[in-house]
Length: 212
Length: 270
Image 1: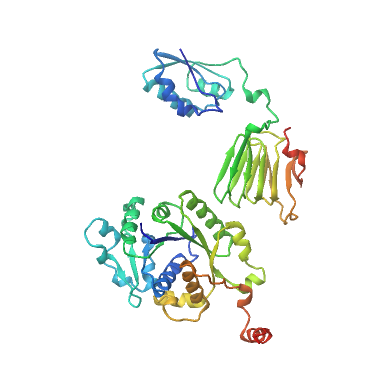
Image 2 (image 1 turned 90 degrees about the horizontal axis):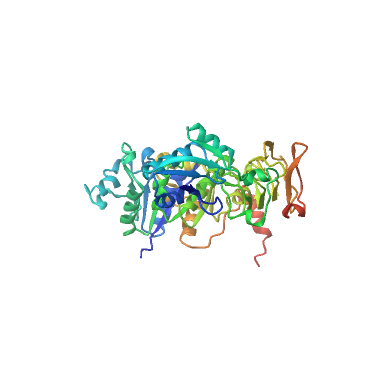
């Protein structure tokens, strides 16, 4: 029988695993990882949980190449399932459908790090020493004075928009830039995006908020 | 149930004036008639007893109280001149690992039965010492100086206090040099409150008298000193008690007597 990990968007597999295992009746269990990207240590934990429940892992299938590589590294019988991973369907750019928006209310203080695969809309400030990173866009309805990373999984079309853009450092995909030294013009929202491989800051345009 | 206010005095960065503030606020509150205890949670490097001039009177610590080898009354060190103020060291400097957050809560619960104010002098940093001290606090006063590093650390500490549900958190800006501020050589009050976004409980000007009084073991607020820092601590204590005292204005502070006289002449009294 096959153990199917839950949908990434609904539940974390670690939370659902005990429940899923308790429903298994046969000694040998195949594992379908879906589109989860699992590291070696994730998979080792998974194996341990499976054997603790008195089962044995059979074949492992997954849509993400990383998962299959990690599983093979652990000496498991792993193969790629046919359905292509959703990440590879649209590698770049990352789409920003409304449901893929993470909304956070509150100021990020020094030492905080807000991370998401989704576009982040922050209602508050990013203080110096704080970080905000998203696989898609970073939108700050407030003052951005810390470090912002948009497209942290490689999307080069990602943008950083803030009501007051005065960051210590900006990163888009793999490109890093120091923040501007001088004060930005008051009352002007600005955005940063990649232009010819460099991060450029300019007044925010309304399109940047719309679905691309 | 209890109306005791348990206030954590913290800063993140060291050397910005947590202990000095705790000692002076403790004395000022006690002089205003509130039964106050200062709890030294920075007992690894304990200084609060030095500042209060009580070093030689410490016999027991809260550790012995919780172990029931002595009564709370025996461990509390009453201040010589200010009977409303007591000091309690949280622990023995050689047994740092002993204290856990629940012990701290137990100590504070004991103190809350008989005091109006419990001021907790927090150690610098954000490690176990800070977590222990913060575990027992209901509200907090964050001390910072107008320096980038101190403000950054204060910001981090405020974030941690928010996650622990300590409310309200207020700000004291310490060691303000009005002249440097007006020359824009130092962060301004607005720069600091802009980043930290907290209500300002008080401004304390840099004052050489603080060093003198610290070494002597007699907090400034103990005498009716006219030094600016003593006044500032007095004002902060009054604001803590809910009185509405206007903040000092650093741009007015450096003006000499003559300028003040001139201003007085210009004011239309009649």
